Length: 260
Image 1: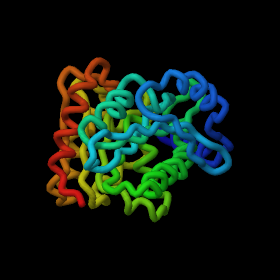
Image 2 (image 1 turned 180 degrees about the vertical axis):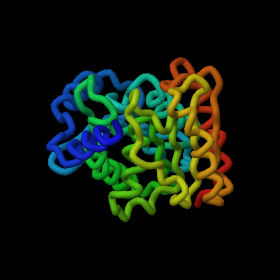
Image 3 (image 1 turned 45 degrees about the horizontal axis):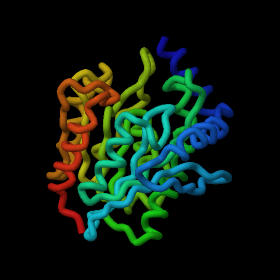
């Protein structure tokens, strides 16, 4: 069974799977006109543009900006996790930039997404560049579910010099996969030297919960005092109707950081 799993991964790693740009455009067409909070902008990634939503704080002394990466198959205005964060963090002094991540067909599973992790690299780079071009410092990267896999891969594999521009990282629902589909290796948490928040729900997916002790041990191994792991009770993987506790835990943690 393990040999078969490895063979499937090998085939998919070298296959011709590409993210579904047409589906992205359909998602953008569906949500752009309904955006009430924030401004839709299109950033450039390789040979196409992708939707992002920039929401600016009214606080005259902005603390910085959070780049928000949605979960698998969703979009930058997704009602769970993304919308609460992108609209509420500005009320606490943080600009937000929520970006469209690579997507596949609605039925695509974790192993099918693995080959397109690399498609996220230029998007994360483009988001960071946009903030830097607008003279915004203190950049926080917030990722949920599959985008945790993508952004961790970006840190480890992309070779991007812009990795040094990230001042803190927040992973929500880290380690989510599909039934009998496993991560090929642990997240490189212990290789990062920036403050790191690992946040998950008490009703999260089993893989997320079961790996929590190992993730905590890696956080502690970094020696970064601000790093922490937080469990939100009565929250599922999507933090359905738990946006307020999620925002509170994140803003409370951000307020403890020592940033320039």
